[in-house]
Image 1 (cartoon, rainbow, N blue to C red):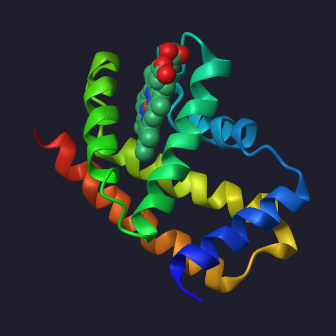
Image 2 (image 1 turned 90 degrees about the vertical axis):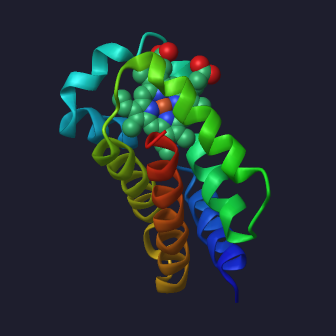
Length: 134
Ligand code: HEM
């Protein structure tokens, strides 16, 4: 099973569990970085989009999709409107997204799915780091 298949199996387990990962993910993010909460003016719309884009980027990376780099450059640019977001916050958000998937999937989550998601999470962090350096 390659990373793409393992990641999809993990997502399917989340789907079967019927859990929306967005609320728990942002509860955790705001608990860790409370100073960011006031930057979110339209919480409901933005948090869903932010979560989806993070998931999509990792899924795209698993099959080396050409558009991932442009997507990353675009969202990092967009985020300059919200101040200088430290790399530590990006990295934590990406890790917390994968953690939220694993928790939501529960017993349906496999070690293989976890390893695949974490491998692509590391690649995404490296890409974000490069984009924030400009
Ligand atoms: C891989 C990481 C991230 C991705 C892919 C991502 C993506 C997105 C997307 C797609 C939106 C919605 C834009 C829109 O349609 O209006 C958004 C909004 C936003 N993001 Fe992120 N984001 C990430 C990390 C972060 C981090 C670490 C912060 C730290 C503060 C942050 C702060 C914000 C804020 C303040 C908004 C606007 C909220 C609002 O208008 O209510 N993002 N993000």
